[in-house]
Image 1: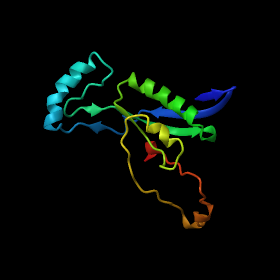
Image 2: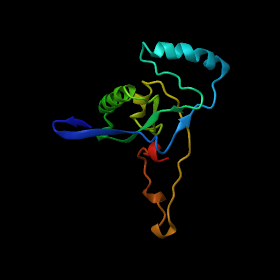
Image 3: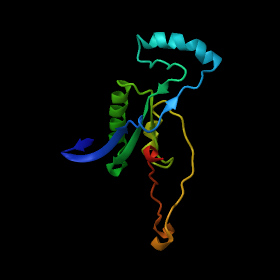
Image 4: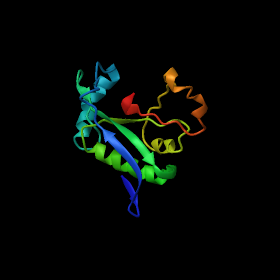
Length: 148
């Protein structure tokens, strides 16, 4: 949580879903297989994470429930840095976060090593609830990767 004068102005949650979702190493390319012992040796004396063995799980988490008052980029940067530092001290190799490309907060993610993802957003509704399209306005859509 970020607070300003006692008022909550932002939040970001880190969620470990390893009991539900897992990523495993099937195999390494020949080059990465050769580099693995050296990376793992370097990880013993640096901030690098060791490369897991073939078949092992890669620990990762989700950054979710992002809510920042007035889309204050500095507040989000502070929360993101706090989450990043906390995750680096644990077993996690990476975190997954999702912000729409038009979200003004998304530029803070560019300050970290990242892989962009693409997808489609759909409207799902029940006919008895009426047509939701008139309620859609120009605001930036929010979606939650942790629930995807």
